[in-house]
Length: 175
Image (cartoon, rainbow, N blue to C red; front, side, top):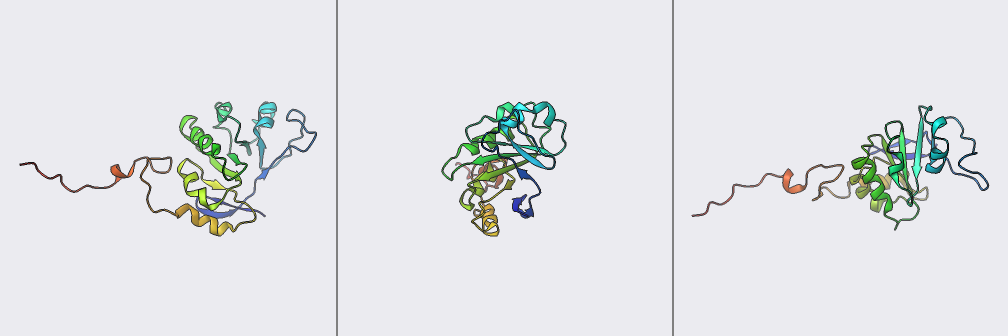
């Protein structure tokens, strides 16, 4: 069974990521039962059927807009965001929009070209689960979540910036 990082721990992944095969269309593809993360296009085409399922997730490609899920975020157990290549940062904005603008509180998973170097920043915008590349050590990648001990800016994982979190000495009195 494949492992992922979820909530800063390595766990077994019991979800299956669905991809369309050549010749399949989002409207006609048979969606198997079980814990399944379907492409956004399949969700949009078969929403009425899929909304009935308790354990269903959606994955968003980097060129797609998360706003199409605005009426569905409370229903989805997991939303995955695809990083097709390491240098494609659009997934950061998608995660931010899901958490801050759409109020998604469930599992937000980074999939695709997920490497240790970006995981600290991914968690800052709201990711709490990571399906790392299979050719890399997941235990080494886990260390990426704690590469830095402090962050200056406010973000999803820390609501206050550093200057609001630290106590300052008394101000010098002017005389």
